[in-house]
Length: 467
Image (cartoon, rainbow, N blue to C red; front, top):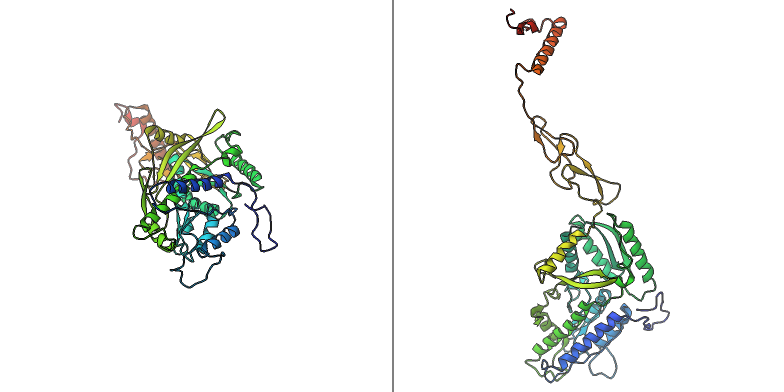
C-alpha cells in the first residue's frame, strides 16, 4: 500500500510502503504454476513468460501497469496506439492475472476492456464484476460475493443464530459484501448487532486501533453471559494468517489460461507471437473446461468459476488456534457437503454455540418487544387466563372459545369445560334451590306482576308427607 495519509503533489507514480506477505505468496504461486506448465508437455514448443507489477493495492499504480499491458508488442517504447478497432492489434501481453482487491480489479478491467484482454482474478469477489456489459473481459477463479454471502447466511440459519456482528474491510469489496449479506440474513430474521469496518490493508497504521474497537463492540453486544477469551480473539486470529484458498485460486487462474492457449494453438503455429490476439483467447477461455482434483471446472456466463467454498473451523486447543476443514459449500446445490459423518456431527454442534439476543419463548409464553431497536431482542411473558400459545416465539396469545373451553395462566393449550350434573340429594343442590326460592320471593315482593302466573315452590314442599 501507499504511505498512510500521503497526498500527491506532482503527477508521479507513488512509492509503496509496507510488505504484504499474503500478496507475495500469491505471486510466488503464480510463478510456480507457470514453471510447472513450462516443464510439462501441456504446451509443446511454447514457453509462458510473465511480468509482475506491484500495485500497492492502489488504483492509480494499477492503472499505470495496465497501460503498459496495452502497449504494442515488440515496440521500442511503451506506447499505446489509439484505434477504433483493435482486432488486429497485438499488445505485449496475452492475458492478465489479478488483481487481489476488487476495487483495483474494477479499474484495471475498464482499461483492458479497450482491447478485450482476458483478466483472470484469483481473489476479487465483488458481485458487480459479474456484469459482462461493464466488465466483458473479466473472469475469476473465486466465487462471487453473491455466493459467499449466501453461504454465510445459510450457515448462520442452519446454526440457529439470530444475533451477529459484521466485520468487513473498508473498501468497495467490503461495503458491497456487507450490503448483500445484510439483506440475506435479515430475510431470515437475523439481527445485526453492529457493523465494523477495518482498513483494507494490513499495513495501515490505524489497523490495531480498529481491531481493538471491533473487539470492544463484540464484548458489548455479546449476550447470554458469554464473552470471547483474550487468547481466542487476539490479533493473530484476525490478521496473522495465510489464506490457502487464494494460493490455489492463483494457480487455477494460470492453469485456465494455459488450457485456453493449448486449445487456441491446435490449429495455428503459436510459436509466432502474432498467431492470435488476446480477444481470441478470451472467447476460448470463456468456454474452457478442465479438471481440478477430479472435479470439472469451468467459467459460467458471468465469468465466475463453478467452485464453492471450504468451511473452516477455528478452534482454540492448548492456547493455539487450529484451523480444520469442516465442510464444503456447493454453489449449485446451495448446501453443505461433508467428507464424513464426523465432520457433519461437528458442523451440527455449531448449534451449541449460542448467538441470540434473547432466549426462545416457550409455548404458553409470548414475545414482548423490549426497549432495544432490534426485533431479535424481546422478553418472554406468560399468556393470561383463557389465552394460550402452542409454538415457540409467538408474537401474540390466542383466545380460547370461552363458551366451551378455558385455559389457565401460562397455558400451551385450551381445555374443554366439563359439564357436571348435580344429584337431587346433594347438599349443594339443595342449597342452590333454597337460594333460588329466596330470590323468587324477593322478586314477588318487589315485582309482583311478572311472577303472578308462576308457581312457587316453598322449601316445605320438599319434605315427605307435607302438602
